Length: 180
Image 1 (tube, rainbow, N blue to C red):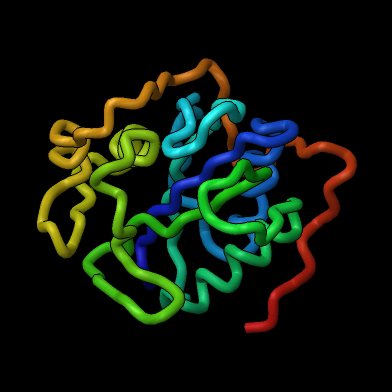
Image 2: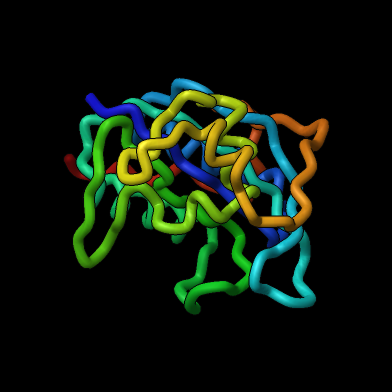
């Protein structure tokens, strides 16, 4: 069993609803252990687009990084994510931030996330739920990474919260089952 930390973000449509539906979808493929508060952040590397809502989720799974990534991409697609490229607005983005105790890289996925240490919008919610989680290649905790993050973009904790099983918008249907 792996403890995995995911970063979620949305800046199109019902941003809070998108996060909620994503947490529910994640709960269908892994055991959700912890969910952070919701943070609002200005887009990094994107001009003139709506602010993001971001959060982190800790899960337990038996899936290795490539299989988990495939399942997360299915959730993104189900929730309306278009494969239009990098650094564009999106209904939902689900990134694998850390696998506890593991470093992994292939042509599809790299764990820990290669930009985690530069992304305050991912570190703030990660630190909230797992301040002592270790970035396996840098050998630093989430707390250390946050304190030393050079990213200066605005990240603000909101009063909103998302929990697994919270109501989703009526137009979203349950995810189709994924074969093991």
